[in-house]
Image 1 (cartoon, rainbow, N blue to C red):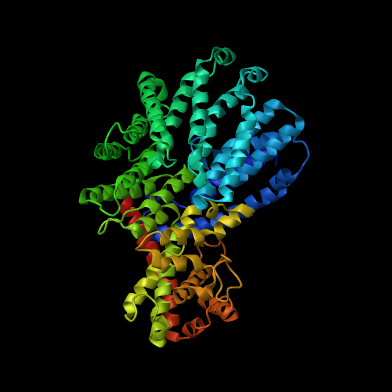
Image 2: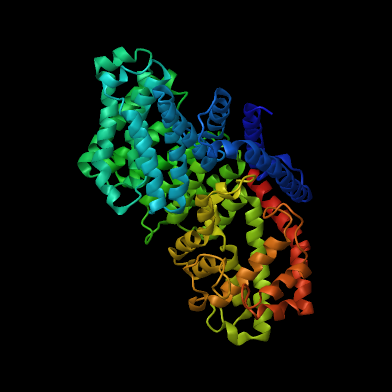
Length: 625
């Protein structure tokens, strides 16, 4: 195979894996078929992953780790991978961490060849890859050195490009894509400031505005018009004004002052004027609803309209959304409108009207996410959903936090959803039988001394144990290559991320300890996070039970968690014996050796698991209707 053929094959396999990992329910006729499709798909993924791993190890990894100058064939292959595995402009990313390495290799090669044109194009690739990488990192570590590092890498690449922004330097570049990359980055660089990453970031408000002012001014400078006669100046003005309008996302997250909000609002009005004037051309890039939504938010924050009017407008925008349109534009409205509405609601004094409106938003969002293709815009979607969950207001009797979380998990990654339900049932079963033998062990467990109440608490704690994985779905479904150090770090942080989210809510804070400790060994000498001390755990008994149930389901499952045939219950019991007192709590072995418990666990792992596939299919089918 030529390197270009290898690159094309890798893109094909990566795309196929993403599609197989979450099949569309509309292509399946019944629950039995749904389970068989998942089982077949994950076996296929196992086979595909082996082929992909071979291609990477044989061709791409050595190339990326080499230090020789790239020839034309190698350049073509890497450029194809970058172009087809990432589009940061629409947030349609298949394997951002891998693409980032590709972009860095291209950039290093261009710098060594002292090819200015190639350097700028490669730096532009690095900018987009860094932006996509940052979107992943800030979801997991919003205020962290990792997020800041990604931002700095992106800003460094963008600023290297912008060294050519002065007209006298731009003139030294060849006409065409290279000059365009410079002007595009004059506005695109602000995307690295979309969300604050530190408490001090609120001091950056004037810096962000200055960048956009400079970008906007370029269209009025004759020299730039002369140097770039074929540049799309209408789109440049439109996109720069649009960047102004989205600075106020999530109710002025950056904290722009009133004078700055007035400037942003002024430019948002200019955006709407330009949109109306150039509608026939600009409609290919956005929709009227998206533009009006951003403009209305700016007007509200600047004081032009009051809160009640703004809320009514949000409701109108939601009603005008297109249910079966799955582009970035429509997705933004589906996710951002509920978040903006949540931010207008007093969480301590929620009206019935607000609850009714929120219930409608939630149901429509769930329906939309279940219907959307699993290939497009996943990174953007997850970023928005995480923010929604952090601000979520329960609507009792309709959609509460647990309903929303599980519904999203079912839509985005069904195997993890089924795993969560299985761990919940297994944990509840173990808790009931342990209570029969040693009720005194549960004295500090919520629900004590009622066994059903204890079992219910354990069930919900277990159902939430993997909530942190919703933040890192892209990493979970990155099959067919070894994970990079950053990715291992992300996966190993899902207990902390989940615990942080659960502890921020009054109704779920009692489950946070289970999410935090379910991957840590009983003796505290293995697993993660290393900072978690099981001996000091507030809810240690439940943590021990859920940790065991988690391993039990993962080890015996044939779908989702591995691509090999799952272990039998007897094989897991042997593992439990070997790890008793180290990985697993010693009291668990007594339960597994009991015939009654054994039969119940075996039933949950066979017919009980089949019932969950049926249940999942029924839910998905109902939502799709």
